[in-house]
Image 1 (cartoon, rainbow, N blue to C red):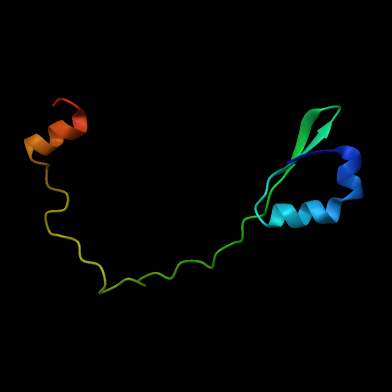
Image 2 (tube, rainbow, N blue to C red):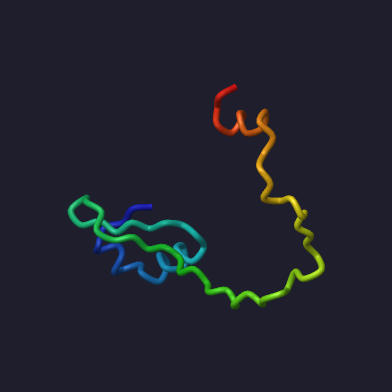
Length: 78
């Protein structure tokens, strides 16, 4: 949504509500974009180390070289 500076000043509260719901609001001056209202990303709580302990298994050969036929698919040589 694009709005001019005058409309943005007049309806700032409504525009903030729209931005908070995820809508991008572009403020223009003389028809040219000068600012963008977007929602602020909410900070997540820090991840707890070891939260998946005992729930994830990594195979002993997870970093072994790929078979040649599969490697060729990744490299686009097939």
